[in-house]
Length: 286
Image (tube, rainbow, N blue to C red):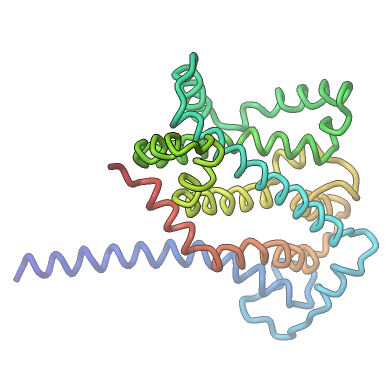
């Protein structure tokens, strides 16, 4: 009886902690949504259930002359989609090469990738700025204040962990399939596309989705490299709008935050099946 009572108390404690964490995570989200529909310009004057619902903040968001919101959204989609395409392609080919081919320096390459994952990206901010500044003097389209430069940084930053994750799964695919295809006269590219890729497709989709979420929502690197109202991404644009005036209109800011978050939220709910499947595949070892 005592044991059963202790189990009930332990379970109740776990659920209580979980409930507190959920509330702590969800309340700011609902507060932002409520503020975006509130006529008040202040966060402090808002409530979870607005008394006077209005969509004026969303109308002002798209019509405000100090904002270029549609352009910021377009820039974010452009940078993210191009980055994700390159990341997925290079990740697949690099992982396939590391898994199937033997070449001098392979162990060193993999060790270097693992070491790079140890250091947080924030440590490279100064180096990234200087490198992009130097590149811009010789190759203007990948220098500072260019989408090309930002895409290069995103691709380089996402490659390491993704390559190791996809490689670890390709290692579980029997090499006898490759040998049989080679005997039949298939090229390595045909083997990858017709044998390997169909098996790793769920993981590639997972890599692409997570890469889109991280690049679309990035603020630090985009704020470091991009300047100008027509060139910045939506996260940088919303932040800069809050810095332009002393009396910031938080209704417009929260409306912009909600609109900017919608693509990621919708993408997550649509693709959560693939994300879970890809993560589970990454954990499988035969």
